[in-house]
Image (cartoon, rainbow, N blue to C red; front, side, top):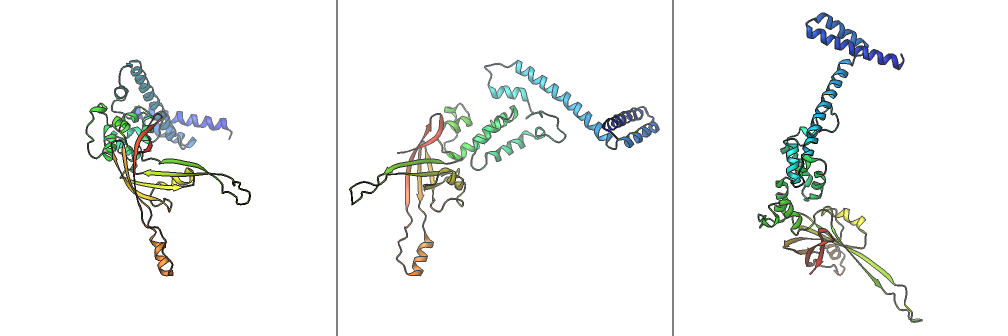
Length: 318
């Protein structure tokens, strides 16, 4: 059987099935059953194919109506109207609309309360508000959900447990408070690159110096939303260290854990160098002299500032 014959038989099956539907609506059940049997012999999947075609047709009509409504709302747009209010007026209770025809349940079927709960997981324990801003760029409905005041209030309360209800300087916006008020970034880490030139050693034979060396090392500071901080001094570049600072367990052996406290623009850090208890125990067993460095506490005071146009991207020693 060639392709033309197969297509013709499928079209005949659809015609017979639709004819059977008409017979059934008119009350001629015997003739309807005869048409159904003939159609199923030509194409066993004819009923499913017709149902899919009707679903696609209805969905296309609904999408066209929604687009027309959206276009009408766009035409009525006032340049002085707030973007949040404009999207709220256009979308109403809906979150989003499927761009293409869907045969399964679309994301738009979820209630707004459940979407906000999902966005809490997007922000996560590390307060990744940058990811929330990326979600806001998906569509109008997601923009409205990502601007929900409760999400931003929870983030502000985690950074500033006290004195967090004064929204007057920020026009009553929790989001604006989180962006403009000094805080540390808990996604990624702060990196300081230190470099200097070390002169070569002087030769005793001809009083000349050996080759000079360009010494480079890095200081890494990784902050967590619960007040913990990790500091690492290493000659390894960021590509090898940053990924190890996601958790305390993955951190390098020479990490200095500690805590930080935020007061205005100032950041107070208390860091402890690692106490090498295992090395001291081994020295005692072997009878060697214990030269292991004891635990040392470091106190640092840093000031939060902006780098170019990026808020809170720079830490300066005070």
